[in-house]
Length: 208
Image (cartoon, rainbow, N blue to C red; front, side):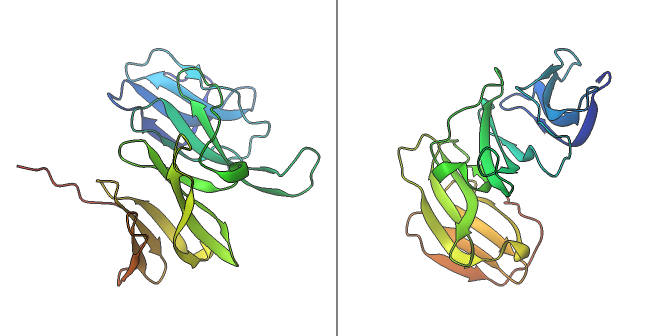
């Protein structure tokens, strides 16, 4: 694929549902850092909305994830808490993949959080937020119709290796350095699993 002067940065995502576009992070010739798309046939190279104000890859467009229908992309930035502030924190963002416009976030209080994951049907989201002396997961609906609630145990981000929905969207698995936790989204109960891993995945079995 001919990207011209655009330099890809570590991550490429086929756009659902048909993979006719590839979404990726990159640095432009002007030195700005942002999200881009290109057709799988090499045509239609474009930027997805405005680039970051700064170029370091550890500040902007972190852990981008596409919605199951490919209409939006969620990510987080390390940015000032308010205009003129000297301290920064992690804030969630959502963009329309076609227009590049920012989409209002209904599921996160004050946009605070990181590592958003869409449910398989695209209606729900789970992400990490601060709680107590550490971190917890928060679960809610993308459109805000179901208020977000904290789920699972408190943990430190230093031992968090990842989390994701089950294929049927009824559970979330949380991988920590010393164990894993399976969280039931219907009952809010969780079970400790004797599995430690830095890789999160689910096996999907076809029904006969």
